[in-house]
Length: 431
Image (spheres, one colour):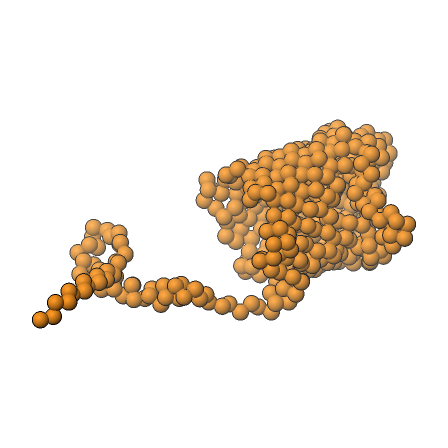
């Protein structure tokens, strides 16, 4: 007699999904549930098997992705020191034609041309960026540093940046990259405020839906500098690139709130930022107003987006010169909607801008391209403009063409008001 004990049978259970049914459907599907559950389980078995094997589906990158990938010269996430080294650059060229009541002009402009690199180091907690710019028609191949900073991220919610960077104000019109701008130029109100990159130290952090940021900067930082060959030969390369720190200083403080969960949309941000400048007469940046406050509302859902951004500046210098603003307080805003006619390919863009000042010459019109034809140096007390255009994305914001037109009107109590239209077309390329 075989006395070997029998091995217990292994029980295999096939889980069935829980299905919520309306009362009216319960009787109809009562006898079908076992069959539906079995078929569903059989359908997902191949997927579960692939997941257990650790295999993933390979997606062939398109030609543009392959081409742009060559800018990444090195990438190894296992390297404890240098994880990535990537070239960066951009070119933005545009043709403009301004027809106004005070004259007309047209030309091609090499609007922006930059080249540099990004690096990620020490488990990607340290980021370094360095790039320089050329000027229109490349008269000077090197026309000064643009960004030159090191950013340290000790925590996922905290970062510190030191070097030449953007003062933390004006979330959309200033802090967002020009690569993603849907218009050719920033708004008139921002352009007259005198804000530019400066050497400084900033800190940024997040706490749930809230965010904060602060910074201190030197106003002596130049926007451009002399040819680097001369500075290298004299042993003075870098002198002046970050300012001499003998001028005035600026400070920024800001806070934001992400409320997309309240509206149930893809993006919904609100920010308020403040810049205070202790100015000297010799300052090169942040040198026009004592205090500037910006507020930004940005919402996006599906193919549509809307940005509303406003600025209020106080404490400007008074000047009786016809070439300068009278320094009075100024307020301005813009409203900018976008809508994708063809998703990720063709986008409609609109923008309405308004600015006004207490003084009769406290508003400064656009230096591009209105000032080129205006006889009154585009100075007045009220400004309105309306832009309409399109973007066609060849490879997203990395390669696109734009076209648009902008009407602008500047009121001036002296009687030499400005009224004109600028037509624009151009290309944006970046990597």
